[in-house]
Image (cartoon, rainbow, N blue to C red; front, side, top):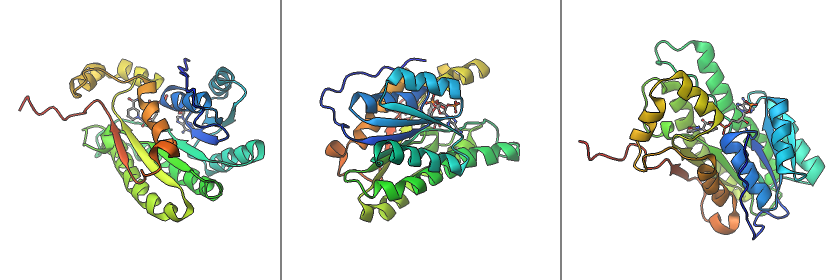
Length: 262
Ligand code: NAP
């Protein structure tokens, strides 16, 4: 596991407390590391306790872990309660966890469909629900969610996964309206192909995936987790992004925008 925490000398998150759901590796860990580097206390959520403990230890005393599956609504309640009990409240939520089970829509086993809906949609719904009452007590509160470029453009074999991510964009627009009276901003990021442990696993299982991903963006490479985390941190920072809510930010290297080949 690596965490490129970087430096954030302004301490832009000083005095703030964040929950990052799906935080022990990859994009989620990079978001958590950036929050800690900016001075926040961070509650990390993930399922594997050993990897979670290692991530929290690497980030230092400002980080603590809550082990649980985001598909279980009790996990959201436990994470928010831990933030309030330990740090006195909650300012920021980043929901990052996601499950991708490939398959054509017609043939995909329904338990795979149910699992993607449970993690990718029910998960963020339970976290935003649990967090909103606490976020509403804090000025400058914000929620960000990791969506996917697949939620923007259809990819054969990723139809159900993409549909859960596209539905997340609808939720973000709706949450932005519903939570604006409470002073809570809600935004999403759509990463393109990013080097994370689960992407390395997928690339091993699907020959040509990495090459195809690189071929379909303008930058002609995959992203690092930190390149996705930095826009997330910008959105979470109300001094920088206080006028941004209901937005879905493509952080995908210009995914499938090269029409020059005809
Ligand atoms: P990642 O950033 O490495 O996130 C995985 C983290 O989430 C791990 O800490 C994992 O720990 C945790 N997690 C996964 N499922 C969970 C669950 N059900 N409950 C609690 N924690 C869970 O890896 P990633 O999967 O590549 O990407 C994260 C997000 O980015 C997802 O929403 C994904 O859809 C999206 N995304 C990724 C890419 C890409 O190329 N990597 C591209 C577009 C969008 P445990 O396994 O221990 O739970």
